[in-house]
Image (tube, rainbow, N blue to C red; front, side, top):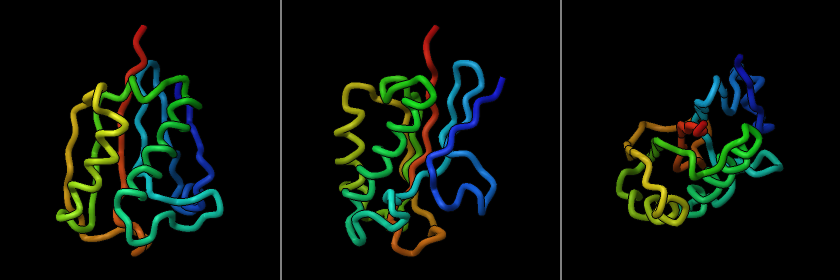
Length: 128
């Protein structure tokens, strides 16, 4: 059985994707951008604030799927400027210091919205 989870992102219908998909105990979370409830970018120009917002969206998504951040096994942090990795890592560490998922930080050419400095993907497994 496949459970599709929406977050209300204005891009979900435009692109045709789910914020997350749960199949059994596995949850795959799509690239998550720093979008506020009003559809606008949170923390323009500040990768730390944007990273925290992405993680907050993911946290809420996990809860909708019956999971928590503690269930995350992998994160992928995509940055438009790899020199921002320390500020993104600071926000990541605040959420995952004790969880310690496998993680990758990479630079990308850009995102749909040029105000976004970061997007994050995650995978989680809910234990039996």
